[in-house]
Amino acid sequence: MHFMTALGAAWQQRNSLLCVGLDPDPAKFPAHLQGRPDAILAFCSAIVDATADLVCCFKPQIAYFAAHRAEDQLEALIEHIHARHPGTPVVLDAKRGDIGSTAEQYAVEAFERYKADAITVNPYMGRDSVDPYLAYPDKGVILLCRTSNPGGSDLQFLDVGGLKLYEHVARLVAQDWNASGNCGLVVGATFPAEIARVRELTGDMPLLVPGIGAQGGDVAATLAAGRTAAGTGLMINSSRAILYAGKGEDFADAARQAAIDTRDAINAHR
Ligand SMILES: O=C(O)c1cc(=O)[nH]c(=O)n1[C@@H]1O[C@H](COP(=O)(O)O)[C@@H](O)[C@H]1O
Image 1 (cartoon, rainbow, N blue to C red):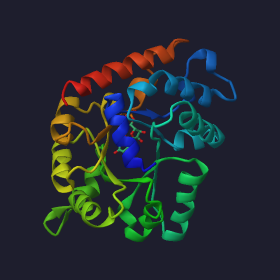
Image 2: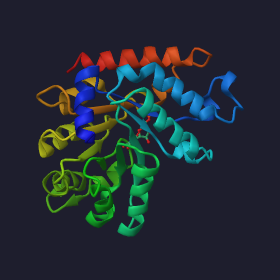
Image 3: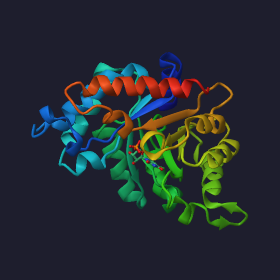
Image 4: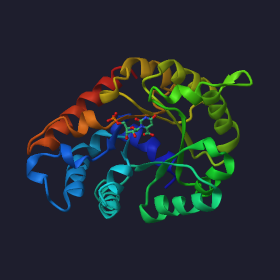
């Protein structure tokens, strides 16, 4: 199924714009999981099972797996999501960016090895570095536009011929790169004015919006700036605030409650 079709169905059926980010940090795991060789998979699948009915997608961050030599656990986790929670899109957060021949390998890694439904990609090496992902027309290609971190302004706010660089990226992706209708953009919840500008430049294009929760982004302002006329159009990510809501054996229950609270806070402003 096309990523955008699956995402649209998840927005409707789950009545949720929440994306739970899977950023497993073993140092923050509850004591009973510490030291287990499969701790990352056990932790993440418990979170997934406790929150799947509350989300429009999951977003595993690849560095949190690769840093711990746990790529096999990432593969197993995505397989678990597809098998146990069909219809829940998986966005592999890899922020890749490289020349075309290397990007082809990254695309195979994301879509054929991990079987992700979408990937985050850095657009700043230009069109030929993104083409290998766009060549999978059913897969989502979510390009960094206006990132949530303070240093995002260093480059993304530069003036390029009357537009800021992030505005140029938004327009280029919407008008040129999105021929298969499979592109999205990353815009941080920490910058609602820029979310509004990106929405203005891109019509109803789905936006991945990280930065609520641990980074302090404003939910009400994010929704006011970014929701579409249908009250959707957003994948609003929260990772640490949900994953580590509890510290004990009941961590998955605590994560579920945090996900319910976040989904409801989002829905209150749709
Ligand atoms: O592409 C991303 O997901 C991303 C882009 C961005 O601009 N800012 C950002 O925080 N992220 C990711 O979103 C997640 C945010 O995590 P929390 O701050 O714990 O909710 C991390 O996985 C980041 O890598």
